[in-house]
Length: 388
Image (spheres, rainbow, N blue to C red):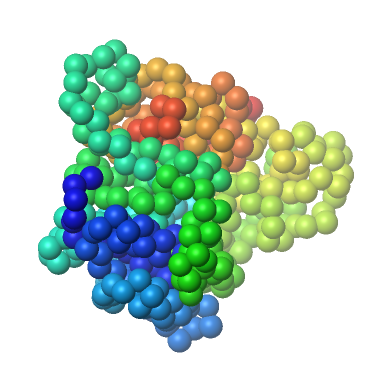
């Protein structure tokens, strides 16, 4: 990194971005803080933490001796992220708004704003790393994973329990060239230690969880405000009606709680389950408005040996060649060996897994890795069960 640069840091009010700002200042950079307000539909709600988050971010800026600006990206968020979020749920899929928020807001709208402030780059508190690769001769391996001519690689964060590269897989070369992840080299325990050592007011603040604009409120309660819902039957894997759902949009594959059939015993032997095994949502039939539920975590309907994605995005700007790689079909999942088929720059690809994947879900992201290098991924559109 060059000697001194103007770096705009996204201060969320959390400890990770706060320590990121501190580390950059320690390195001699001119640091400016930006607090991004992305949601304002119910600021007065008991569930909205935006006001407190800004107060925490401002307190951090005061301790660090840096300027902070409050910027409202709510309109951009609603147009670029929330509208897509609702469309996906209405279609019966389960989207991941954090992935789209990173690509469209934190590393696009925020990056553009920072550049207008004269920043040379931006920084966030994500647990990931960026590596600049010096141009060199092409090799068979670099060609296979789409790294020919690539200048910047997105790497996993060094703390395996906190790695967030999954959520960042849609970032481009242009975005990565202007991005720093100061805590990506550190374990979370060290980040907390640094925060306490320098007296940050949010050193012990609990990590945020869930979707940013929903907060801690019940998810179904939130969706009810925006989505039409039509009740319909819940059937088991034999086609028998075992209950009624409140609307297919409110369920996701692999869901165990809140299905509405808890305690129901199976009538006769059920594949993969027993009389007292828990029920899981397994399939949605949008045409007939039917939700299918099965008993047992390991039921065959919950296992997928192949999937197809669309809307692919590749960090290097080009797709990897077909062949063996590893993939995650959900965050916090261990990398699973797979075979990549038919990848294109912006369209579909297919993954075949040697070990069936549990509850692979349309709308979620399938993200590909070559070791610690995040190559990119796509949105799951179809899953193929290991059994009919």
